[in-house]
Length: 266
Length: 309
Figure 1 (tube, rainbow over the protein chains, first blue to last red):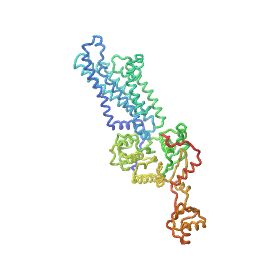
Figure 2: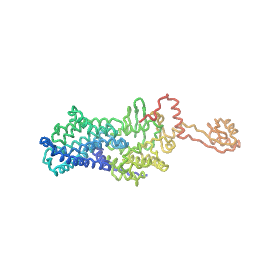
Figure 3: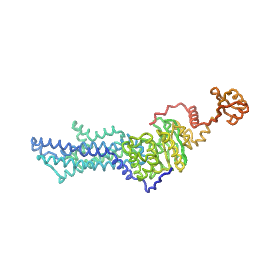
Figure 4: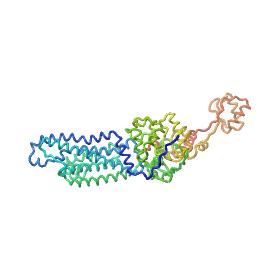
């Protein structure tokens, strides 16, 4: 029996090698593409709903209410769903590997676990930034087109700094959320538990804040509260301040997950 | 070369692996034997850095597995056959592994051909039979052309052709100077494949010896004879100093006297023999006698099997 002997490779395995492998894994899964399409297209359904209800109500609004109308959040609110899906998808990067048992094969090829962790986070962050930007741009311009076609509510464009902030902020938020949720997946290991945690930080917290007013100050420092600030004209917190908070939160969860992942049995 | 030194793994009060030490040599197929739950898989997982030892260490050429520049080029492992993404094709799963080590796609095709999956590369991993999954796991283990191959129950689920093929593959890998470490609880299979044995029970080392030496050391060597005049033959043989037992009418089991002498005595006495058979101890018998001895001398402990993992 003869073996094809491979040419020795110089250097040593780097995070980039693992990133390439993760990218190949991601791009080979057909369900990923479907998932990304849902993330981009689902918010457009909201645009229809929003535009038609705004137009119907416009005549009945007072001058003060008209002045308070926020065309950015009214067109981009569908992205609330996208960010929940982005979180769930990211959490699956690790829980999926634990569920199938492929984590053991992956770890024999990438035994330096911190490197593997960084590679997965990086790929998720870049991919989710792009997907969310596509979703945000599609949602905003489609929503604006629907609004302006019927007249009353004022429409905005890329000339407005608020719009640029909103479009950029949602993308950066998505990248940071991806890192946080990849980390949650590595910490929790089980799909159901991790998905529950993701749904909690990306939506349930917001519902609680609607019910309990005392909770509203805390919500500003949670992912869903930070997302809300990204698509609002009148932020409850400064928009970039929210991004900084999100970055700090993601970093804390990521460091905890990386340490746990590196030390525990696979 | 693999060196396992005072390796222990405890889950709470239960010791899955208990102060285990042994070394594996290149060019040799080493069989790793022990009942279910003895700690074979846990030991292999610790060698590969998947589980952290509670105490002790396992090194490969003096290094921990994670310290190699390109780990798969030194150690290839098949732990459980279905440890791949089920929704991806076989070839894609291997390409992902190859990418982590800058191994070209041509090598993926070469190992798929080697394990007989050359035409099945496009099949979804989910749809593989256990036998195909074992071959796929082997392909993954050989991907980096490693000098050490670790296989946990590789013949599981293979048909007789596959079992024979794996045996020849192990042999040729060892003949090329590689270190081959494979676990099994199939004694007959191990007897035909392994040169050296490491036997553990309840996480402890029971034996570490060349297979022949181990079997011979536990040899309850005897000769079986069948004859219509077995009573007469038994009397004659006893006079020549043999220990004779009669497990059933017409059949004798004789120790302390060789087949040749027995034949001569029977001829001299003009007793017709129906069968004269020199029984060598099989690995299975040697293993059973070893585990019996261990069970006698070990204090009664809670059963480990099943509670691990």
